[in-house]
Image 1 (tube, rainbow, N blue to C red):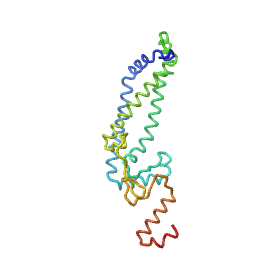
Image 2: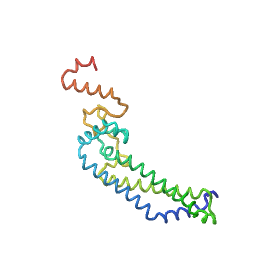
Image 3: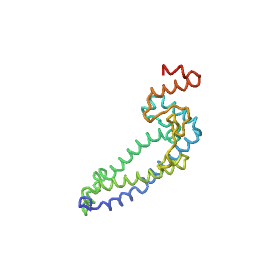
Amino acid sequence: MPETLAGTGALIRLGLRRDRWLLPLWIAGFALIAYSTARAGAELYPDVASRIEASTALNATASMVALFGRIYDPGSIGALSLIKYTAFMTAILAVLMVILTIRHTRSDEETGRLELLGGGRLGRDAPLASALTISLGANVVLGLLSAAGLAAGGLPAAGVGVRTKKRSRHPSGGSANYPRNFPPIGNGSTPTRTASWACTNGARRAGTWKNSTKWI
């Protein structure tokens, strides 16, 4: 280990001991929120039709799209359930990790703890390296427990990090979660293509497909 990182292991053990209550509570809270969010989404939108209706309403609201982004797979229970959770929890998690890093670097420096530890064999980069290691480890554990919570809440394994077989595609361009006549969203579709699909599908149902090709 380079001399500038000397004592990193000892600082990591010290930091974990100091946060032996704080980190587990944070991680357990995030995992519990993930579970409850997935559970609530599965109960609110039990079928594909209800998911598509809710996703369409959200995508049609400009303010919601600006805040949370667009749902590109309206038939996905995971995309619908976690769109708000992802936006808010990502911001909160980033703030918490910044606070955790400051707690083990700048805060220790202001209280004189680093000066006391520096009386032994402690490299200049060891405090920052230990703080980042603790933050990274906490994020990894939090991610694994959150994935377990999402799966336990009823979301499919393919949406929580486990790669399964490739989803089949309908000729219309949608996924297997779409109704066959649902307009394609994603894969490079544009409002013009979606509008063209609507005109074409309406003409087919009305029996005027041959006469409508001139204006589509």
